Length: 104
Image 1: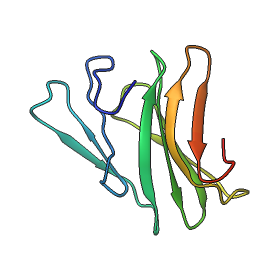
Image 2 (image 1 turned 135 degrees about the vertical axis):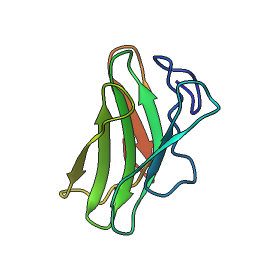
Image 3 (image 1 turned 90 degrees about the vertical axis):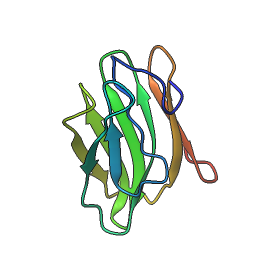
Image 4 (image 1 turned 30 degrees about the horizontal axis):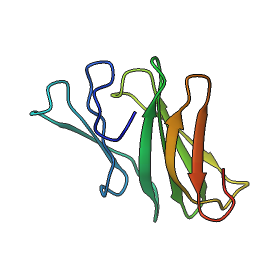
């Protein structure tokens, strides 16, 4: 999925939005989901066919959000890493994310 592609009749996007994800079922009317992430931002979203995964960063660590429908999101912060990830894809078998330096 490239950012902005249609996934399960949804258009999720997080580009340049800080910690918000925009979601639309028609590409015209948008719902804003905002997440409280101190000093952080979301970078990219990928779709596997049954799960959206959004990645980003915060001062507390790596930020990962998951959603089966693009509307309700579960957040996970990996406190054990300071990696900064910039993009994520679904390969057909697994999610792969890349970031600064050697972060994969």
